[in-house]
Image (cartoon, rainbow, N blue to C red; front, side, top):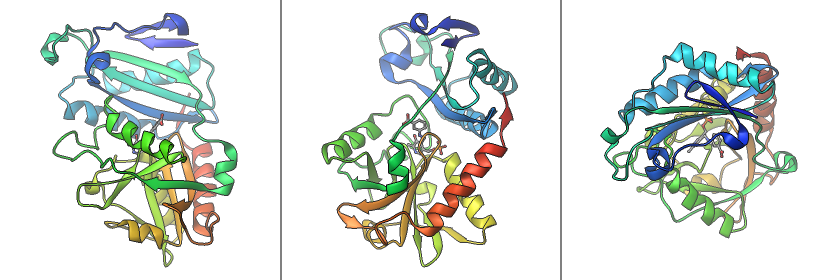
Length: 288
Ligand code: PXG
């Protein structure tokens, strides 16, 4: 594997970052996870836009223009002969010293890993997932805004640990007001009375690119979509539920906190959206 670090390629085992990089010391940095399907990088421009927005929010200047970063991302896929895979694009605050002041870091580092990912076993997509709500609430927008895709994922990891302790793969995170925010690495949707509903981004969620694609696909299929605050009660009484993310894609959810959702099997609209999403990922994107 060839890893891009600051303009040069390194063999996988030699691809190293200093222990004095503030991305490592403090989680000071931002990232994106992008998928390649069928020789194309799906929604690459949207991912790059979000990376620049995350960077702006933490006052980090990415030392490359968006068009150059696009070329470098495509280049990393080519260098690794990736046609179907997963790209992790990381920008750290860079090499600094002990002490969290970012002014000690003279130049941010850009890392591109072009590899593969499989988050969940394939059968889970057929059968549907069992998830739980967890005690750890989503970061408050006034603290570390969940819209920032930062290298500090401890909020999400704590929730993931709580899900694992409950014997399931994924956690629903609520916000401080008790409304559903999102899952640890995915946005959440329900279907109720043939309408597709997802929490508003202000509930404390990442501006998910898969989320946006799913809303567009539903609207194209004539399904009414809306953003509304959801409680656990709304989840338990949904007709269908699924989660969305670049890595996870669309995963049907069939049980939440022990309550069976709908019929207990992936719902009709969920399966339609999965099919439409697969068709979209295979036919659009930035050519590698
Ligand atoms: N919420 C959070 C907190 C995320 O990290 C999503 C929602 C879905 O967003 P997109 O734009 O991907 O639809 C994410 C993205 C992983 C992994 O390693 C997680 C994500 C992306 C890539 C890898 O678990 N989550």
